[in-house]
Image (cartoon, rainbow, N blue to C red; front, side, top):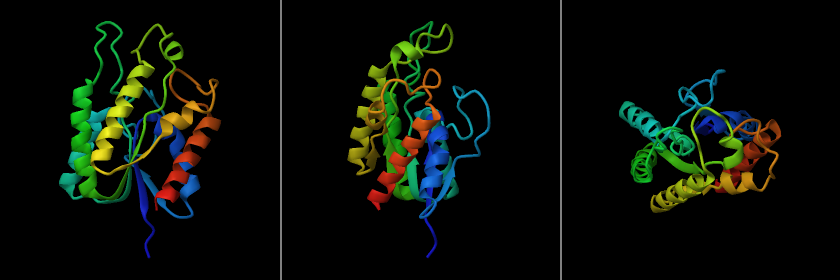
Length: 202
């Protein structure tokens, strides 16, 4: 019997825990993602960094039109959606657009994959993220709100959720290597947490 493939579409945080997830599931699953991971600015989406819900929807729509099928599809977006312009204070993707996008994403994903699993967006510490003098702002209240929207949509489509947000908040305060990404030890634990959920779901 052919081994199933776990295919991951996610943000730059997923680029960091992805290799550890791949290692931990290799006894049972193959692993794939949107493209190879290359060095670069992790705040700029593209390639393996799937970006916001508009980009994920566009990617899945294109793959659907190509007839792409998945065994197990892991999905995440939200961290880019909640980016706030430092000057205009405009959020990148309004919450109603995010919800609409996730409905369409879920519809495509459910048609394309044998199993779809949503991974919640990881926490932001406001004072850590926003103490930079440049770039965009993020607030954890928006992470919580957008995670809630996502979980409601996934419930409607009977898509399982891995609560990476709550798991990551349980790991303490000294977990970040920059404004939003995590130290290697945390990435390892995140990969293990998702792997454990994968094995339980099957």
